[in-house]
Amino acid sequence: MRILILEDDPWIATDLQSILETEGHEVVDSLGSLDEAYRHLDDEFDCALLDIDVIGGKSFGVAEALIERRIPFVFVSASRPCDLPQALRQVTFVAKPFEERALLQSVEHLTVNRLPC
Image (cartoon, rainbow, N blue to C red; front, side):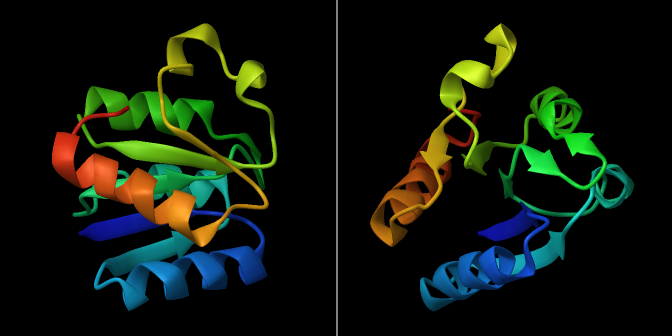
């Protein structure tokens, strides 16, 4: 899968990219801010991993834009799932610090379903 990462911590972004690429996925871009994310919404990618708190605010607007475009995604965040707006609580949530296995299972779930979880 071609995956977009929105993560403002460069160490975590590099870790995510390494895990995904080891499994044969292609990371098309690793973005650190909301401004960057909004500029890249029309790029070609199959799914996304979104941190919630990034440079510029919370990624909820990006998540809603991805839903409108029918692009699946997973939240990967240190925030709590109960902090999500009600409309986004059905989305798969991987808590930081994440386990590699949990992250890969969430991406595999996207591959199978091709819809936000």
